[in-house]
Length: 281
Length: 301
View 1 (cartoon, one colour):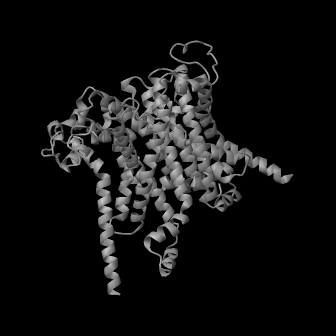
View 2: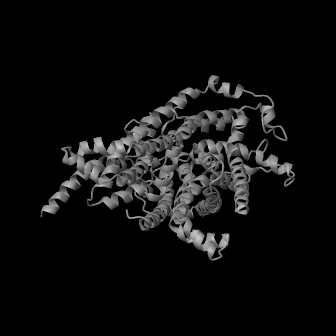
View 3: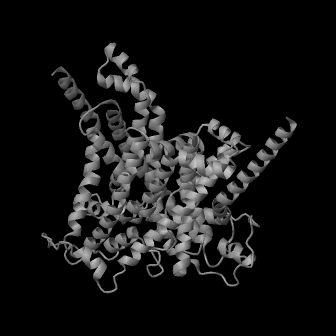
């Protein structure tokens, strides 16, 4: 018996060491981004490089808020775009996924297939037509152009995620409510929806992050710098000051903050979304 | 008769729920898709953009892509294939290895596994920027490490040379893809009952045998769906390459997606840009149908 526990213990130590090494190597690029933001220009080009800043230099971060480029404005644009896209896609996906989960009707399989396929389309495919359409109806250079386009990424994902959620809720719950006099719609709103809240959260979080991370729509549909989301802003900043690495890294850190915060608080939801959205569909 | 009436009422209700989302997707995806197809059969560029009636030219744009003097289309298809296969091969193998590692319970296993996912979540634009710095000629950590270890004598111009720039963009893409592969394979691994391994151990199977004779066959559907999904997501990558190299140097990392974008929005040759996008679409559509087959086998839709 003692021999076995000794072996088990050694195995656990080895696994822990392996896990730590993997974690350190894999997360090193992110660590590097953070420390670079706090280094002086001179220290960045120092050879050999320093693992930790000799002196903590906060000017690069501070400059982000005082430079000509209005980073807070870009942050606000991204927030407006991502939240609106999230609302549109969640509001449309909830009823659609419920319909696809609960009812049997002609075309159901086709619809599921269509949602599945739209999830795989490249943005370049619809970019030019959307550009021309938005131009003709005057939506170019407004937040609406990327909002409407970004929601098309969130909708199919949310529909597929939420469908598996609604399928897993026992139908009897709803039947009971209907016997008690609820209509189909109120049974949906009062019984099914509250149970599906975790799924709705997953769908909303992903829709937000898809829209927050988008570059191509924001870059193409909005020409005015002060209307652009932060991803397009960072892309332009890079073209201009390509070697000011502490500034670009500082910019990068600020722009990923919402994603990191969401990640910290909703990690469990995110993992479930990743697995359910991709495998079960 | 009665049952068919109930069916139609149910169908009507179902359409009420499904239609809004479907309509939205038709307006913003379906219609543009058709529009794009038409565009690729017309002559729409900076000269003809304002003309009310566009000339129909059939497959002219597609033919021109391959046959015009100095056509780089074959090269771009090759680049896209290299980028996709290179990314998938490494991220699948590493993702699988990490899934096997993190399947075990040990101190910090769920914490580390969880934190790794962040690489997949952060906006690709920022990842592109970060890797542009990592592969920088001066001050880039890759060059510094290789110099310090004595692997190279002179700094490598990673993003300025054809082959090394492809290696750099593939590396960045692998970093994004590993968590995705790991999580999905890990989910597959948890479906294999522990008793199967126990009885295999009694029969004298070693670790490698267990991996290839039990694990791989048992989670084959999960592995197939990871590979096809990985293919789909990688084949259409745009942001990462656009931020890191913009397809350069001299088209060395130009992919179908970036080429399509360049045609339409740098050269304003909308029709040829649309034609490139449609070629990309056909490939994804075929693989996409293959993918839906796999998950249908896996689970009744």
